[in-house]
Length: 433
Image 1 (tube, rainbow, N blue to C red):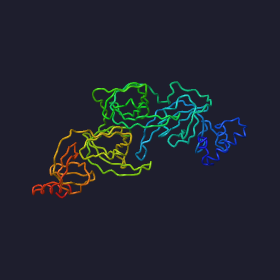
Image 2 (tube, one colour):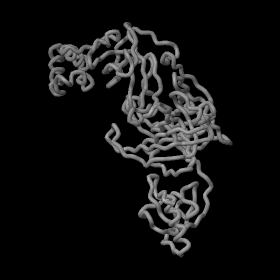
Image 3 (cartoon, rainbow, N blue to C red):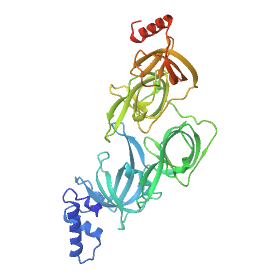
């Protein structure tokens, strides 16, 4: 009865609602079951089930029956605060019309359990994102009959699904996520970002073992993937009817030159870091702490500001590092220029350069980008904690691009010539030399 109580939970507590349902069953001489009695109680309180054509009557909460005419796979989107959400769309109909219902986050993850042709009882509120649509709050299967034909194929209008084969490179693979199916049994899924010369795409594996042993950088051939085309993107899903196998060679992923960025949309870019700010912490809508960082990338065609969100903001970066952003969102920035936002759904890659063994004696400098060690000729980002501005160190380690990964650190032994060299380096950093 909790499902029906949700329609009137702002009017009476659940205990009183349950009492009224029992009273209704007794008043009907035991001829109605509990769900029917609950519906009658809701109707007595002025919140009866509506026909779909009457859903836009201004109520803040509505309840209705609808036959499933189409289901779209779940997809991710970026909220205004940079956090990622999941959304799926279900088309419901009755003899009076049709309505698009949006399901978010956990409900969207379980959309694969909804079958075309079945009837759902739905509690929803009018949508704030689509005129005439609703956002599903609670739903359950119903045994009532609805006279509404199901379109052949059972797909959402304009978003036909079809099985395809494709070769892609995996750019990011998220850990498995669990969810509860409508029958109460647990399910599992894996979400990944893949790409090829046509662009980047979201891939959902409803059979997680299909992606066992596959990680970022691996190129594969996928057979029997379900393709869903939307107005702004293409998505794929794989299940027990699909196959994934490794292939030789690397699948190339389309990259947009920084100087060719135009308008809004999903893009992939590559460039060297020309400037960067330290990560800034903020509180996300979920109440959890998160991070954001602003950097500027440059290539041979131009430059572009890039905003890194969440774990991307904590990547160790230094000026000159090569950075690849896949599936970023190009959008107008704070000052009107076009920037690339890399949130939860994007992949940020720092291609590994060949490691070189190195020994350096130098002075530690603290900058917004982190700790650096300057040897008088070259300076490197020092991946170490516990040191202060001005410390003189001897570091043995591995050089990866502009980052120095220490293996042994000791105080440096200084001679007069070295001191003069350090002072000259200090002048360059402070602008006095």
